[in-house]
Picture 1 (cartoon, rainbow, N blue to C red):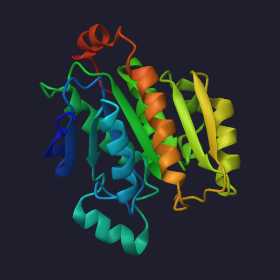
Picture 2: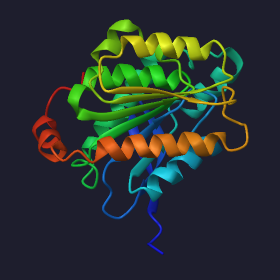
Picture 3: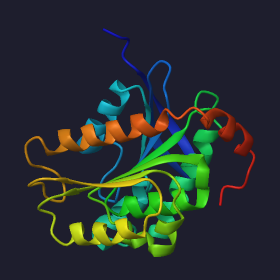
Length: 236
């Protein structure tokens, strides 16, 4: 049995706020995946952790972090005002990406995004803005439509949209979004799954699909050189 990957708690500066996260590093990680969840879900989400564990087993570092501060989360529970604030979520994921690119043990690794719910829209906009610095994007039960057709068309990172087969309404929104994507892309439907993939075996399928997609695209070797060149570039 291999050594268990090391996890450390990190603090990420975002404007005048600090966000807390858990960074897990397997030995010789092939890349790092940042989790961008919708609100009402954080780094302790069992669903995200299940996927993260699968990615770690496949040799990827994972960063699960809270996109909202504790205070914002409390407000959002009552008003839901932050979970659809895509601009805020996008700024947070960009700040977290900038932070990751400055860490000694991460800065040469290709970066992927795993977005869920409204976090998928933020991941897509950030990927569109950061261009070839983002290697791959996966969306689970996401709302990529909230990113808008311009951002969708601008994404260069290979993108996988995973939707539950019983998630009516959201399937159609993902199909429309899929049509706007011009990158390498795939739309995967998990049969019988609803929006949160709570059905038996559904999250396992999500984790398998995500791990396969990340493994395929994070292993492309031209990455290290590219990331080093772009390291001092603009982040927007």
